[in-house]
Image (cartoon, rainbow, N blue to C red):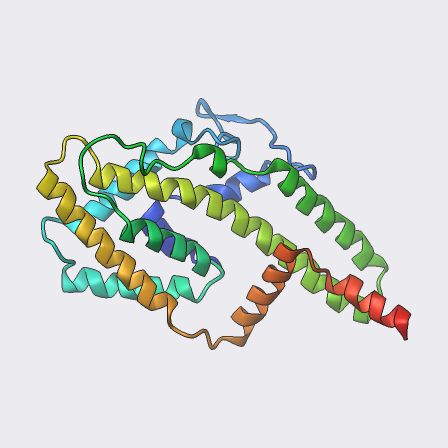
Length: 251
């Protein structure tokens, strides 16, 4: 649905769904300790605690693709084209666009990193927003139990849309931070010679172009179009159930 299997090849392991299990209905993470790591730390905006192994793995995987050349090997290019197309047909298409933008803007000059370091504060989850969505989903589920068949169809869309939007938001925040950190490690590592950084940036730019081409492809899957519509409604705060009731009251 979100193409997580393929996204992880470019941003490392996505942990949001594990973190989501720890959220209460108020959007507050429950604190758990596992292997000495606070499991909720990603949601709390403390990625440096748990992200390093995941970032290093993603960097290593991408460096295998980038190798020493200025262009992708044909076999790697075909693989990326296939994966990009698959992601572009999922609900993560806008996330792929964000990754594309970072790859195509990959810097190569040595020097201070502050010009392209992501603002980690922007990547922290909006707990008020998470809590609001979770409470609204809970309220809609209660209404669903009392609704008639026509109302239930509207409520099904509203509940599904809000669940999808909640997941999209969490994945997006995680990927937004990881992508820039990965690019910084690949391109702006102070141990790299300028020519190495430049060569790596060119290949990342090429991958970004592949993502752009995949995103330009039309989506012909009616089910995917439907899911994108109800998720967009959730983002805007539109409730089909309320629209249905308002229209019925006016009759």
